Structures are given as structure tokens and as C-alpha cells.
Image: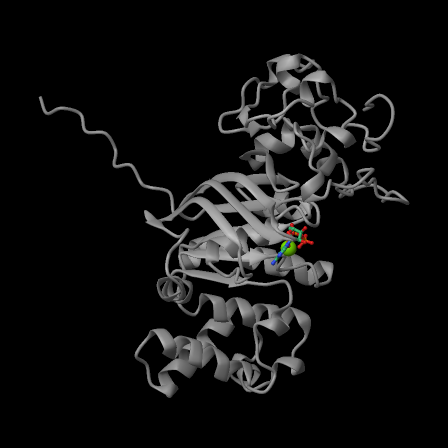
Length: 364
Ligand SMILES: Nc1ncnc2c1ncn2[C@@H]1O[C@H](COP(=O)(O)OP(=O)(O)OP(=O)(O)O)[C@@H](O)[C@H]1O
Ligand SMILES: [Mg+2]
């Protein structure tokens, strides 16, 4: 009998391990991103979420080789289909950025030059990577714009960026990013500037990319609602470090880190009357040089206790929900949190905690 053969292992598209980014300031290095690790599978959508200043954009820019600050120090590893991106020469990074990895930004005006039509700019992008005539490139541009749901794409291609609405410009920017069929799309706050209806359409579009283009997406946002609707996996950054990561469903059902729980509690309810004031997390993240030796969230956490404070920061460990009062789901596969809380036995309510983390007992 032939020996059983194991199914072929497919390597992840992107494997980031221990990524650290520091910038020099007044003769010392300021750590901005510390030991960030995550894995993005083929056709996966991973949400990178965290408050302003948590290091989301710096992480993405470091992966793309787009940080050009003098003296920046980037260490760790980021394997893209097995190829190391950290330390890769700019020439090779540029080639990858055009063909394999594309990025879209919050403000599409920064992606387009105001003096050329958007069609011309997408044509040029296509011709930079494929040997196509102008006519062939334009046909492809119009096709891409149509696929992105742009009405009357041939005429829209002849418009200048400022002649389009915010939503149309965003679609045109995604069309340009997809013009080289990237395996990985990094989208940094792609919907923040848009109204709610257009935001929902753009998120639909991003979700559909994996089936139509086979692309994986790294979606950066500060909005847990966007993550819930769009992402398979979630990575929560706090003050440059990973607070929690795991399958989105598991992490939303049973957050393993008080910071994740607080972010979840700040999502406005979809049904019922909207609260007058959205709960916010009291206090602010520490400045990079003022991060406490232990958990950076400790000063804002209503569950803080002696074990949270000493150095080093808590490592990412599998989230242990066995201590949860409901006793519902136990260990969630793939869910990790940098919190000593579960091991210490102070149970977190599964979904809601007091969002005024500066005071009092948690309540449900
Ligand atoms: N070139 C740079 N030199 C020095 N510090 C920088 C540089 N770029 C970013 N930073 C600092 O790194 C920190 C993280 O910035 P980053 O832009 O990654 O935050 P973010 O999570 O994307 O926030 P936001 O949600 O506001 O976009 C900030 O404190 C910022 O001031
Ligand atoms: Mg940012």
C-alpha cells in the first residue's frame, strides 16, 4: 500500500516576524514598532487595528520599503512568498511594489497627479509593467474602472482627479492599484474620508478582490466595525506592540485583552437608538519613550494588578478562556493575547467591559 502523502503545505503569502522600527531623535533611537509578528495567508483579509499613533502606517510602510527617514532602523523579518523584504535593495522593492504588492492610501488625491486624467495615469501604470500599446492599455483601464463599479468608465477615464467625487476617486485608485494584479493589497484607512454608504461600497469591493483577483489584503483601520465586516483575521496594535491577534469571530466573541474589549465596546450599536456619546477609552496611549516597562496598556486598564507592571512586556500567549464565567467556548485556536489577565484568573466579561477604564469596577 502506498504511504499516505501529506497534503502539500502552502506557504503563507506574507510572514512577518519580530518587526521593529525605530527612528533616531536627539541622539537616541525611539522604538515605534516593537516585535510585531503576523501571518497573512493567500486570499486572506487581515485587519490591522489600533488607535491613532499605534504604528499601523509605520508597519505597512516598513513592509513596503517606503520609509525614507534618515537613520531609520528596521529589524526582524518579513517574508513575502519566501523572499525577505527587510533589507531588500530599493530597486527590487520597487519591482515588487509594481507587480506583486500594491498600496492604497486614505487620500486618493495623493496617489494621482492633478494635471493628468485618471485614465492616462492608470494607462501609464499598466504600460510600466506590461508591453501593451496605448490603445490596449486604455481598453484595460476602462475594463478595470468598470469592474470597480465606476459608471460610464470610458468617459470617467478622461476626467481629472478633482472632477471626481471622493468615492469615485477611491475606486479609481483601487483600479490603479489592481492594474498589475497584485497578490497583496495594503489598504491604509481606505474609507475614512468617505460617507457611510460609499464606505460600505468600497468595503464590498475590497472583500470581492480575493474572488476576482485572488488578492490578499492587509486592511489598516481604527474602526472595529470595519474589521468585523471585512476581515478574516484581526491584529490589534497598542503603542507599537501587538496586544491581541486571532480569527476575527473568536476575538470579537471573547476578547483576550482588555484593550480589545474596550475597542469593541466603542463600536456604536447597529440596531436600536444610538447613544448620545460614544464611549471612548479614557486616557491616551503612552508616548514611545514613556512606555512602561511592562504592559503599555496597564496605566489605562481597570484590571491592572501587580503582575502587569514589571518588565518585560507580556508575551503573546494563546488566549485561555477557560477562566471565563460563562464557561462557554474554551481555548480559541489561533487567538493570542499579550495579557497576563487570563492566567491570573480575573475573568473578563465576554463582550462588554466598562469603557471608562480610568475608574471603578467593570460592568456589563
Ligand atoms: N518618519 C518618522 N519619524 C519619526 N517618527 C515617526 C515617523 N513616522 C511616524 N512616526 C511616529 O510613529 C508613531 C506611529 O505613527 P503611525 O503613522 O504609524 O500611526 P498610525 O497607527 O498609522 O496612526 P493613525 O491612525 O493616526 O494613522 C507616531 O508617534 C508618529 O509620530
Ligand atoms: Mg496611519
